[in-house]
Length: 78
Image (cartoon, rainbow, N blue to C red; front, side):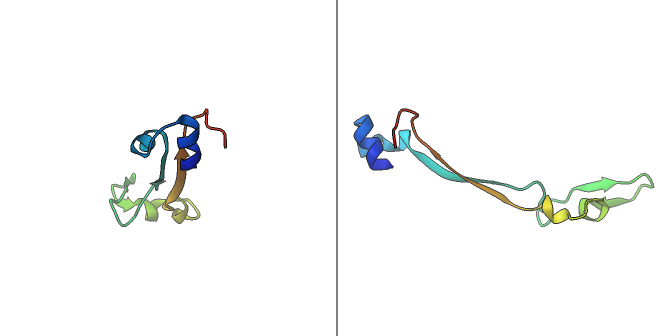
């Protein structure tokens, strides 16, 4: 990819990083081992969302989602 980009755009290695970016982004809705989300019930008790949740599987919202990306100029023909 980098080689094609340098050839087609006639750029050097020194500025390649401006035109070709790759990486990883991750996100999780809820991580129980970090900061807890507390729920105040009508009777005044406070519970962790994992205990108070009516969701069948609280692990679904605590799953870490990773996305990988590659950005390059639209004009580059692969």
